[in-house]
Amino acid sequence: MKALVGVSILFLLVLIGGARSYAEEMLGGEPAEFRLAILSEEHVSYYVPSAIILDEKGRLNPLELIVTNHTKKEHGFAIDRLKVREVLKPGESKTIKISVTDLDAIGTDRSSFKYYCHLHKGHIGGQLYIKR
Ligand SMILES: [Cu+2]
Image 1: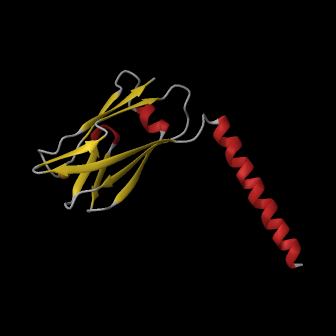
Image 2: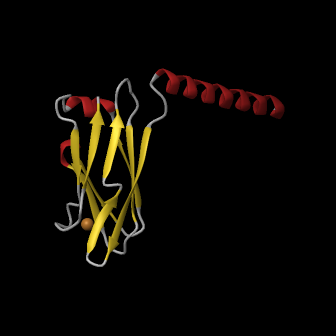
Image 3: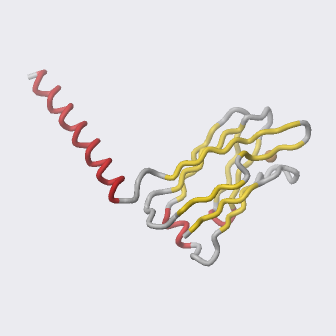
């Protein structure tokens, strides 16, 4: 009986794995994943990279921004037009998922999105460009 349960679980895992990769293939590949770091030197804080270009053509999967605060101070990460507003503690990482539906809702005529720290005016921001 135990062996049967084990084999069934294994079969189920293979099935789930297969379905997932099939879905990924049908929906335009894996999620677009970008890592961003918040860094600081002396009195200036900034994001690396300062520009992200996403080719959105034919893509149906969400955009994922993984933001990590590498500084010793709390910092923000905001994209107003996508209603993103996060606060990151020192050493903290946050994954921000933005669906294609959300990007499309904004319209195809405007394709650049400013990201900035809403906690500090002097914090140097960046731009996310969506190529459609
Ligand atoms: Cu900041």
